[in-house]
Length: 141
Image 1: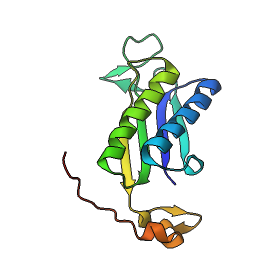
Image 2 (image 1 turned 60 degrees about the horizontal axis):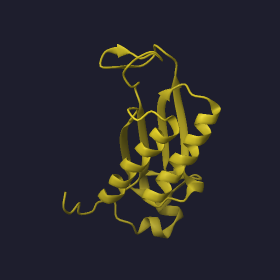
Image 3 (image 1 turned 90 degrees about the vertical axis):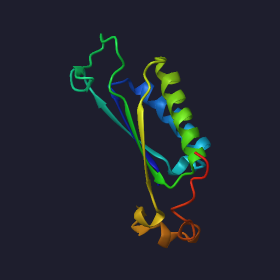
């Protein structure tokens, strides 16, 4: 099950609902995961709790706040990662309507035999997962 942790300033329920929909759509369209298996956890913080460049962020700050995405997923191709970077950033900015609020995105990939869902390794639960290779030729960079 791929999942995303979103660290951001505290937001309204309406904003989180919109983000959940748009970020799920971005991942589904970019990486090919079914929306039903994708999870998101919002890790929100209050003013004065996170810093960038040594400066605590508050709502009156001129600079963007600390924004971080951590995507846990099976191995993706370089093209999928490039598509994800664009789609996740665009979805986030479009919902918040703040063009300079671009998150740092870390993509943490795991082979299918390192992911447990329903008490089983994915490589044990699904033949198609057991047959997929984790390492591949990155090709042209």
